[in-house]
Length: 318
Image: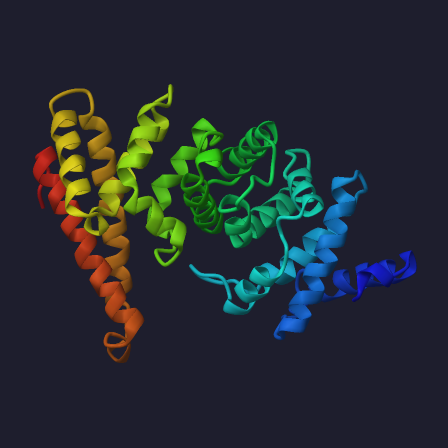
């Protein structure tokens, strides 16, 4: 689709084709880069119309369903990632269109797929040389994101995974982190779902002290509560200086009102230890020595170490 040359009739036919290909139960899979590129062109055009006030939510929903269907598990499909990197998802009409479909009045599936799209393109939005939104638009966007992820469907694992991916992306940006909605910080309870290969995740742990200082300056305490808990969850990945600070804070907390938060972190890590042990137990013998199997067992050892370290401070040992 060279869409600058298409007429309204062409676009009407394209919408019919998208509905037919990606409606629930049809099962058409995008398998070639050219196909994905065409769907992103379709999305770009219709998100522009949506942002301008036209109603194309159903077409966008089906097209996004086709793209997101390729992303199963913890990481997106490499073909989708490659296509996203080559497509300008930060142009103003695209951004405005995505913002518009996050309105709480829109269909929950449409909003969910928009969140899935943002989790794919977050680097273009949150690691951009210039902000893709004005400050007031960022604040509105973050609030709508929190409404969807926290108020509407917080218990869905794919929403938890996408939400925490977006949150790590925002934390990396000095402009965006200022606008994180108070209750959206609790997405960090699912920090175990974060893709540890993402640069935003690595940046946040490398700059943990900077983010601690930032969250200490927030008025409600939620940012500090959940960011500090994240550091215990990933204690094994921190350098020595940051570990010393994390332990010092925990010792101070254990002597006062902070013990309940430390116990919360301990319980969350314990839940992940139990879940990971089950995954390891279910590995077939031939899978235990391949790269994913070795990585899973190494992660279990690290989590158990983090759990025990925090337990020494709280007095809860295995």
